[in-house]
Image (tube, rainbow, N blue to C red; front, side, top):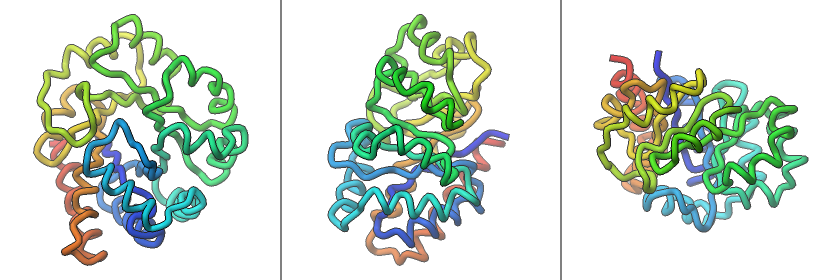
Length: 246
């Protein structure tokens, strides 16, 4: 069965909501929760996630909130942290990665940490059995793809196009996917621009999809109550999970 990873902005609008939403998504088809760490300049994210990041920070998000949310969610749903490197670096990586393992967080997704720089933390991740998720993009050469995915863990984050999250750009991903498959057996998940309308097409030949902006768009709808937001996100998760497996 193909997998669904759901991104949510941690702490927006508050810790309790993030916990309730993550647990509900885990009960409605989501295989992994990507807890986004709010950051002032989320360069790889589109306007919706950027807006949610800023709102979370305005509401007083602190890194300690991420830890509290993770402790409540990780025992029940496969949990990942998605954030920009400065957010993690400020916590001291030598202490943070063992803490992630202790909490039950299984991987980090760091879009602005270049592969070459990530190598200095390779043994830290491996010794704690926490995955540093590899990114590959259509702009990468075949040689670079081979290098990046050589030690890939958990899954490979295949960027569906050269751009930011949330944009519905259509591309033929099969040649790109084929170039990845030549060098690894690690599952490949497609991210960027995946929603209920595009998921079925984007998942072709892949092992799963990563969906963020489609969920965050619901979270930003201030006309909905917290309960309605959780219900709509849960329904969306079920629809996408069904789309990618039928």
